[in-house]
Image 1 (cartoon, rainbow, N blue to C red):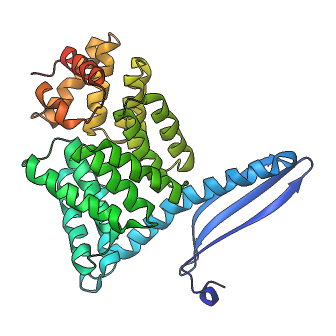
Image 2 (image 1 turned 135 degrees about the horizontal axis):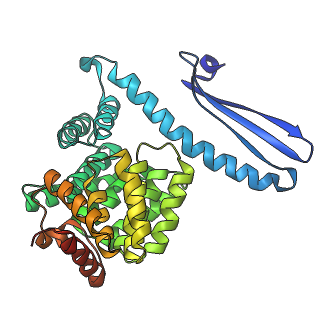
Image 3 (image 1 turned 180 degrees about the horizontal axis):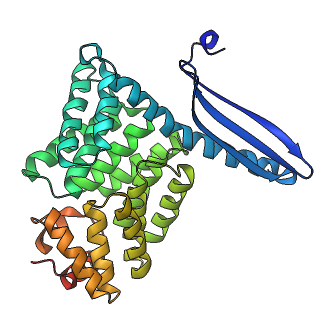
Length: 337
């Protein structure tokens, strides 16, 4: 059937009636190998069949999108470098992004620029390059702020110009405009457009969640990030969702909850600087000074260049009181001026 349809992947499922309820099963198969990439089941009452239908649609789309991407990354990285085209460079770059180290982000950037060289109109490649620059900014890895901000603006704007119905390019480009360039309003416009193009895209809800906190809307942020988690419960960016929830709860004044979410993020990515910053500030304002100081030691080991004076550049917070509160927390935790 797959060969007749000309497809590489097949999503199949079944429906089974049980007295008063229904069970729906679905599985994603790599048609070229027969491998099962993903499977799940959904139970619900017959009287709420349309609600169950919506739940299944959202869950399936959110889950298989990541599985398809991961499968394509694995496929691309097994091909000889000499035969790669722009799409393959994009996927190889994404594979490096998911390693989350300074070196891997730099390598990913090189691959995304190679994809752009092959196709100067490739919106996703521009968007992923912009995404790399947001990672560099978040970790204080930037050595030439003026030059890097200008280049981020260039690739991010090119991403959203070319995006059309490419939700990934819209949300990554939009987030870079907000996070690195500091244009929060433009970032919100493009991320909101990404959500309209693909309301089931977890990374769009992730970027929207972080942006809402920058805009001073932490409770909206919690809703958006929680939705991202529901859409893609096994997402490789889960630590970013958890860190985003920590960030949002912090600015909502819920310091113990913020610390708890930051701890979850750090269990997945122990060296994630944004989560370490939020954890240290949250512990301090919650009165948990020993934990705050221990976290600060770890933060300064990984990012010795971070100072109180640099916080304004690291985080584009719209409300001055939010920056003051974060500064207070990190100062109490022991971050030097």
